[in-house]
Length: 121
Image (cartoon, rainbow, N blue to C red; front, top):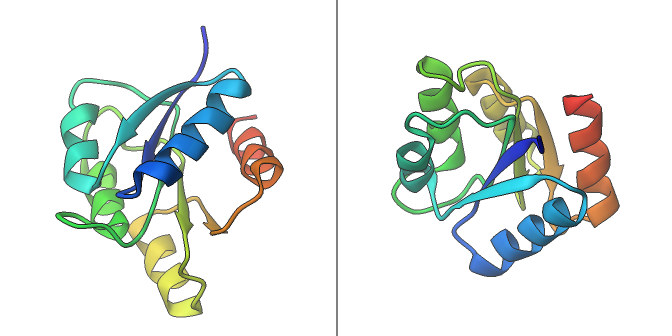
């Protein structure tokens, strides 16, 4: 059975690009448009990884990570931040919230897949 990866980004074009890359590599993909949408879709659903943007409306990536880490089926799932933000303080904030890794946009498809394979084993 294919591993399920949730991609969370308010940009439809970024979601489509990430989803296409992951599906081509054999993963199943669950898409969400922001943190709140992601939490709703995760309710009762177990995923193998979450790839999330930082800056989104309704609920940003940091708040999403805090919520996922607080409880539920996905409490220990790896979470990768995929964002334009590269400041160290943002990375520290992400790590503190529970982010597993950080990729800066724009990203190369090979780079994203390499990180995912490394984290998922």
